[in-house]
Length: 186
Image 1 (cartoon, helix red, strand yellow):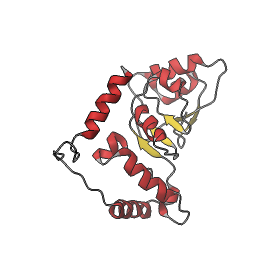
Image 2 (cartoon, one colour; image 1 turned 30 degrees about the horizontal axis):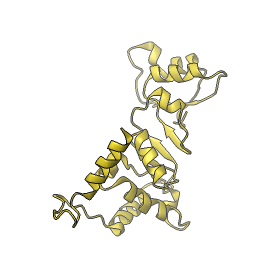
Image 3 (spheres, helix red, strand yellow; image 1 turned 90 degrees about the horizontal axis):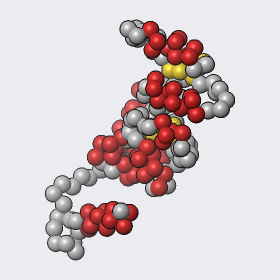
């Protein structure tokens, strides 16, 4: 199966090359200067210049690794507004693994659904997965032998759900979670 996948990927990569005599149907050109100019404009709009670029879905079709490398290179310059990028936002654990395989070292926040098993078996450095449901949180908490404190993100302006067991206070009580309106990581 692995060999078949490798052959398929090689064939896809070879499509549209001079050797095959065909051109790709769509070509996307990315301006590094325009990308970084947009980054600087957004950084100026935030109080402390901290922004987290969203690279999910193949950087919206612009090439996940390509865009991540441009931003990470700029992030490594201390005087650059990009130096304040705390992490990149991505959609899936698959994208996290792809970026780590490409040598990207910037911390990553996975905002798409990730199975409890993947969260528990995560071996990638500086990858944070969001927990998107109470069931996932329960499955993860059951696997720990000791209770751990965690911060639970809540929106004070958001009214509680109709099911009283899903309010932030009930969740915090059930899982021995420290409630905070500023932290959003487990």
